[in-house]
Length: 463
Ligand SMILES: C[S@@+](CC[C@H](N)C(=O)[O-])C[C@H]1O[C@@H](n2cnc3c(N)ncnc32)[C@H](O)[C@@H]1O
Image: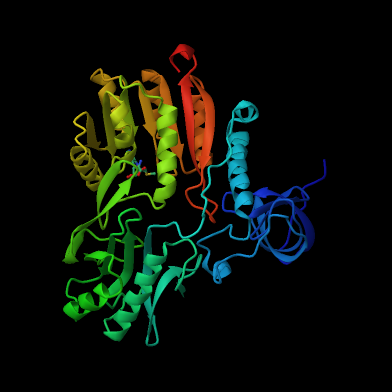
């Protein structure tokens, strides 16, 4: 085997791209060094120039694409390279679905190698139209000279990129954001300055109910007093008839978090109404809700399929958010218990369960690990556990309790194949992974969501 040769910034060499990395970059190997190349695709032959050298890897820029991938395409968005919000617009959608499946396989190869060779990883479920799917935008507002801009900070900088038309946002959210920033400029309302911390308006958040057509606009401000309030509201209402709620959230902190604790209704309702399949939800400005409702229905249907309920099962919906997964399963379960660390989400989950008349679905505030252990002590043993943890995966103590309880089926929904695969190291001591179904919740980005069905190894008759 050849020696690893240390690389230098500025060094140029030809490279064949072997796969996509978790952030959508092309990955190649040069003299036993891992090289990440932004914008390069698997199968491509490129000439690159090294831009950064780290202990375990290097980053390089494309100088020339000598042999392009057959899946390479022109990005739809004019600001694709600058923005960084999407990472895969230069790859055909068929290519994206294939690579996302491959990212799952790679994670299994890294953390649970023998499983990677045997487990069924299904083709990624994609969208018919993988554009303009996001129901919500949260665009920062800044002022440059006399102009008010709204958009995203370009990757790793504090430069705000003004965005007029985003290829993955629902067109209504773009239209309303642009019109709102123009109104703010016209009325000369002061705009937040991240350096001096002066100014009033910091973020425009727009969420639209894809099924119901109801839209909510929330202005996040540093203070409560809002000059020209009435005129501002009147002008905003003229932007689009779908606007049924205008709110103001106060965030005084120097933080990257969007919302503060206090929200005031400026016009109309406190919430907008949205529907997912048979279920209906009232969403307040701060409530978490999936960003791609069309794919969420497919994701939850996959969870339902994997849970394989008969109406007799006790189900735990761990990391429940506003309770959507548990409510999706509730009509087919004997009992549902969910838990989440965010009290507002749990309040919404309780309200949603009540609104649907699901008396057998209960929600609790606190960590999944604590509640599961407590329920076990009290003698509550679920037949099925579904989990949908944050990117960090499951807490070790949660897995420990699962290993003691040994529910018949365990349905793992994950937005991070690496932490999912790591968690399988322990879970596969008692569970068989029946299959893994990737679902594309975020087309044009490198993110991939999966649903995995796990069944107890010594309980094959209970599938
Ligand atoms: C990926 S979201 C899933 C939300 C929900 N299942 C859905 O589909 O909308 C992860 C959730 O886990 C919650 N969370 C994070 N750490 C937690 C913990 N240790 N115990 C319980 N919930 C937690 C977050 O508040 C968040 O709502």
